Amino acid sequence: MNSMTGFSQILTSVANIHYCIAIKSINSRFLDISIQVPGILLQYESQMRETLLQYFTRGKIDVTIFQKSGKAASSLFKNETYLQQMYAEFQNFAKKVKLHKKMQLRDFFNFIELYEKSDDIDPKTVWDSLESAFRECVEKVLLERQKEGTATQKDIESKLQILEQSIISIEEHSHSIESTITESLKKKFKEVMGNTIDENRVLSEIAAYLAKYTINEEIIRFKTHLINFKQTMSESPCGKKLDFISQELNREANTIASKVLIPEISTQVILIKQAIEDIREQIRNIE
Image (tube, rainbow, N blue to C red; front, side, top):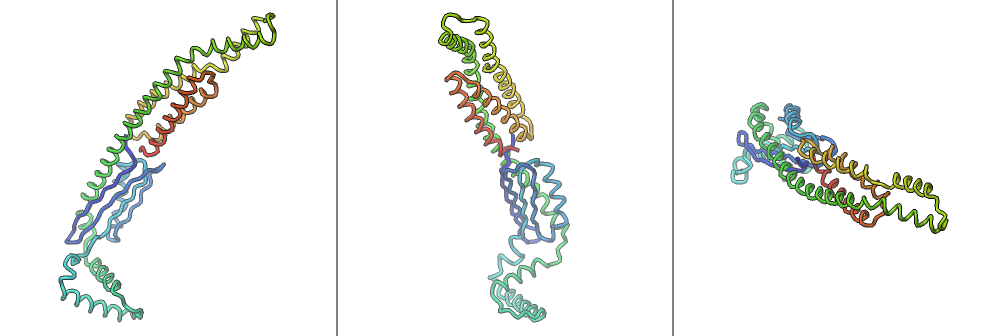
């Protein structure tokens, strides 16, 4: 069982240029992949997407690769000669393009960044160096999703124990439903008709009420859904299927609640519905 939540970030360098690779994964009903990369890597976006499709089936996956600094960024302020040369280049560029706006310091540093990024760098060389770091980043996100998925599974298993204990308690109390209905109907007939009770009429009414209010079928279906739920938890991915099964569990609980005539059963139904709601909340983040 894997969660859909994870994050990983890796810093790496190519030809003295620092790159940051970040992958963030959050929950989503479907697989939604977003990739933002420098222009030099745009031709490799489809390759990154194919790699992600091999590992993810659900979730919103955001991939960001950006240049963290230029070649001379670490020593920029220590290199006065370099700054002077770049400022001269900046002034010449402003004159060529007839830039009339008042220049600010940030315009100068933006120019330096553009200048350094425009160096003749082979895209394949950059991607060949970044690909292994990209795959490592993907693996770290997968590991995070697995860790959180394991923790979520333990929490869900504790809720399943509540469901098992409660349905067993309901089944035990359900055996008294027939006697409760029989005694109640006989009492009502006696109050209305006195001692002139038609036994066949009483038995007919009891049979009709038992058909309407017994919950044996619901209990059997509930237990079957529990078995399917546990088996499905070992599958991957399993989130959508678990959500469907939890809906069926909730449906059976609602049916039992609508038929219930015994307070002890009502108490257990409340516990079941609370546990199912907690499970469904957890499942929303399962792949």
